[in-house]
Length: 604
Image (tube, rainbow, N blue to C red):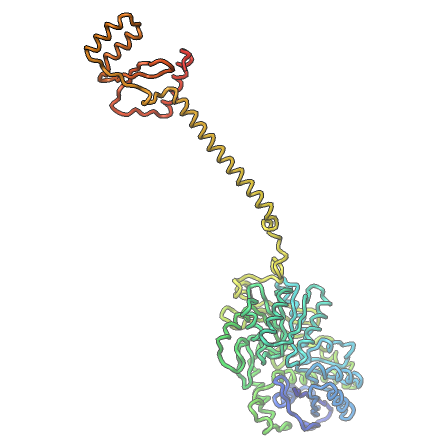
């Protein structure tokens, strides 16, 4: 990718603005810092300084070179600017790799330099190493500080970092290093695992997700900036299709070139990150949406803050003025891709305007120091109104940015839930909600997730199930309990049975089985006479028997012979018109009578 940047020469004296090109190739393909869609922002800043009556009697001459994002080219161009053109200040570079040699050369020549665009490495913030530099862009160190604030806000202290080098734009490795520096500085959160995504197919991403899920639930994926390649969507789609979007998972996307849930497209249109780039609505969009419902974005709103009311007017002016002097970019800037202002054109405006403010202070205090690079950063300190909002510069010459934390609301639109104002290693959080459950976790039943599940990432941290761990003993104990209960039941049944048998036995002592009795029938007269004659010498018993035999059966009694031991006992049986009921009480009385009879008579 060819990325263009600008060097600005501020010289005393009144004269017209002019632009001197030292390279024929001014082509740039970056939507972030493209020359043809951002250069005129410098002229807009100078016009503002004039309107505000700053640096009266001074004007600016531009010398523009192109480093093509290459370190060696940038170093050569910086030497050319400092040595040959004797510039007063260098505005640029716009990317990390060229910035390192340019910052060092600026220190060597003791000239001021102000970087802008996508220079985000925390290494550039080292004021001891680069004492002549100011930085208008937001660094990934600030992003790391803001990320830490989000982690602490929700009680998380560990996360997994998964990054891709696809379309390498220096972002993910720089962010990884800055996150590690932040962790070492604060020592209150842990990057529990780092994994590079080398295979960007669904199968490759699934393998990384499976690996990451065994080490964390707060997952920080890092892909090429701007979400222009659709890798964010593919990642969330794979997660949704394979069970990695439960309420346990949180996906945090820290990004310095993002508007979160709105992805700018060529021509000024936008799309949602869960939509397939360039293909229109797809059935899989809803699957990917489920993944993004588990996400949080930490972004810089592409340097446009909350997108102020005047920013659209600024964008139109940038495109319009590229066709005017001193740029005169007409035919070369007529293509459709050059009708949308570069993302960070506002930062170029702010960098030039900031230089004007610093020069005003220097010229008032000590005009001889206007090219003294080591004295320059202290004059940058302060706050001013940038093209997209308030901008604060700290005492090292670096920017103290405001970052935005977004999540998806219940209606699936992006919602800013907090802003984080970063000042070097400290930050101030401003929550924009009162009810965390509904504002942040509306897609999780209102429950804040943990950074580690109760049972751990693999379920091994839960106490072992006592039953299954000692199942042998439990089976033995259960068997003994069942056997004991069964034995007790059987013993109870047997006791009841034995008691019933004893009652029946005792009842049998006073009960007379009907089959054991023989009915006595009345004899006729002849038989009676003959028997009487032959039984003159009979005893009383025989006389009684004779009497009963003569009676036979009456209206109320029937007479029977009952075998008792070896004797026949004649008994009278009373007749009842209804069957008498012998309940337990009566049976008990009869047993008592029988027992009394046994004691008094001695008979069984």
